[in-house]
Image 1 (cartoon, helix red, strand yellow):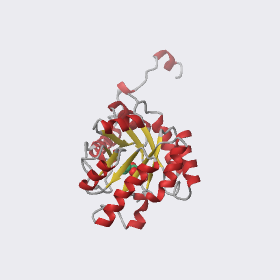
Image 2 (cartoon, rainbow, N blue to C red):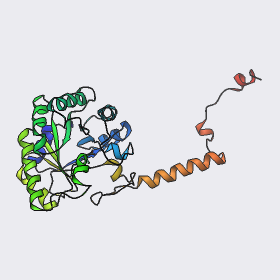
Image 3 (cartoon, rainbow, N blue to C red):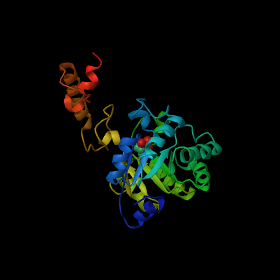
Image 4 (cartoon, helix red, strand yellow):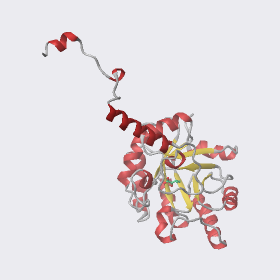
Length: 275
Ligand code: KIV
């Protein structure tokens, strides 16, 4: 069944949890889609796990567009959301609508995600009015890592907690169809989930959220630069890959690969003419 923003809304009403993952390439997105994922996010985390940057700030519109197009070619059922990179929407409402439009029109996304609370509500409102669904993102917002002083849990004191709860209500009012809640205490995320009618998508925000999201490379055990507490590794593909690469290198060096089963034949008749 094709997942839409309506199915996301209905899932909250029916108390059905939704599963979201990030993807950045065709082959991975195809497997995820076939496995039945509800939503695929082409996150700006691609800056970390694909492009090797220390944070997401260098990621550009062209980067996100390039990867969204690849994922869009693979997706049949999942709701496809593209992340708006740093400085693609903060600069003005006009830039926000224009860049969101590019992600849908050129990239093939069904909607966009953007980070921030009350301060980006004008952008959320304008993008939504342009008929583009918006997934908001509050709590730990990695694009603000320089101003919040690092990747750390948000909402542990009253002032921060109030601000995050207010942000959730503000983005809902501005028209967001869902909201990612990143790295906040689970009981605060539960309160937010009860306080808004749009689905909350938790990452490091406990089990009460309406949906969960993880970065694909984290949950597959491929990315080893850092491992947040909230990540559960569902596979150790990194070690399988290392082993496969090592086996291949050894077999090539030993002449054990390729064997006849990997080769193409030519008739004696043709070959004899060449001597
Ligand atoms: O960029 C990303 O992958 C994200 C998710 C972790 C929510 O923002």
